Length: 216
Image 1 (cartoon, rainbow, N blue to C red):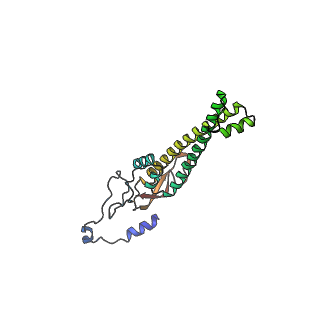
Image 2 (image 1 turned 45 degrees about the vertical axis):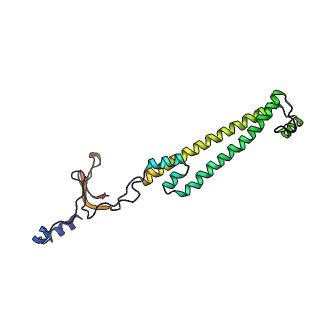
Image 3 (image 1 turned 180 degrees about the horizontal axis):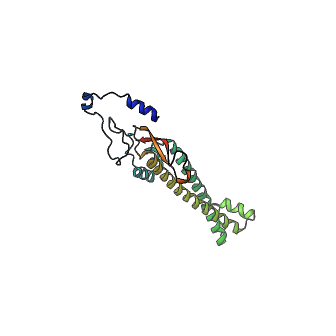
């Protein structure tokens, strides 16, 4: 490559004065470090139209309504997952709350030694349990179990709400919030590599190499 560069330099003709005096139509890149490679560009950088995406808005939308942040991030396919998970947890809350109410009344009957009337709530269930000889402790344990499951289901809903909020923030922050330049440049130039003392070869402390520079 060095030999080819040498031949090309010797083959060059004297530059045309008119072409040298011609005004340069390229614009130099600004904001680069001194001595760094900054290729000329013809037009300003072009950014994706969603570069103004706001992670704050995504979080606030998700906190107000589950799935709204996903819609804001254009991740509509995540909305059914969000509502599917929250819906299952909500059904678990309703299921456990219903049985909690039933065993709460039955525990009251057992604890106070009250025999309910036919018109009283859960009379049929009370008669069935007493006829089967179910001890009072089993009623109390069932009451505590349904209460625990109900509380865990409520915590699960809050956790799912928080997870979908975090998901909306991550999508907005790391997928939509950063601008990506559509114009890329690459430059390949000859270079030398400085070797450590212990790795020096017959070439000496420097060996030839190729430098590839990317700018965007």
